[in-house]
Length: 462
Image 1 (cartoon, rainbow, N blue to C red):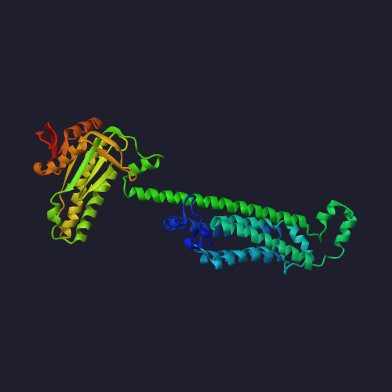
Image 2: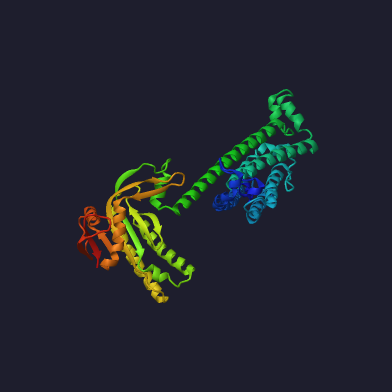
């Protein structure tokens, strides 16, 4: 379609959002691609609107003037519908001279049908009378439909072309047409030579001041709609750019952090102390599993593992803090505390094991070794905030993080897939007082945790 807003950057026809430089144009291709479907749908909608409008006009004309001569005007409307179909067929994103020509033909057919004499008419009506039927209003339909599909430049071009065509057709008609004898004389006799009524009721008069007025108004409306279309296009570009930025953020941050970042004008600079549930998961025996394998197979294995575990973290309202080689760290209750942070961490750990079990069944069918993972979960006080200078990272640090990591290591010694601290169990019990959250877990009291002076109670999944 003729939408110069979607032309390649080198043509300098793209209206980049305010603040964007020419060298940023390659990045704008994401934005332009996002707009392509929107513009294509607009073109299809414009063609459908044209067919509906022309059908309504044809029915109206036949009902008002049920004579054979209206066949000429219905034929013009049919040609306009056919031309609209051609425009839809040849329309594409970027500059299209053929489509511009077809749009020009739209206006030419409209002008011909309204100004030119009807070859099927038997009435000896002066050609100037054609202008008394206010047919020019139909040009506004073409203009309105054009705003659905074309760029702001094309909308303004429709206004300029109509301005030139209509005045040109009026001038040619006025210059070459011979007035019908007797009509002007009869009007002078009826109204008087100096009467203002004569200027408007003389059948041979073109009332040029009205012809000029209507095209000037049309041109003003076209320019106004063009400017409005440009502002709308800029808004769409900016919104698409924001969606691109949000999509890029979601590749590095979990959805709840992206949501928090998108709603704040400033980075998450405020440092705060907050109780958070922390989860660590790690593949058991990964070094042995990866040894002797092709590096590409190892990367594919890690991607499959990380993808499944990440999905469970997000599904349980967690934040993916970081990948740790063959494992990852997730937090629940960041950047804002929730009502089920400890419960979500426990549910996520159980769901991770279920996801691994499903994956292992697939791996067994393919003759691949099973993947075993250890999970450590703890609830406690942490320090939250941005770290870094220019490149910021949202960090969760504190003893609770270290304890969760030690619990994950402890799964080997306890021979369990999940090691849960008693602090997390107590918090989850407060969140869900009607459920026995220790079902399927075995208590191991007085467990020494590296880095802590005191022993702690640990619950291990059977």
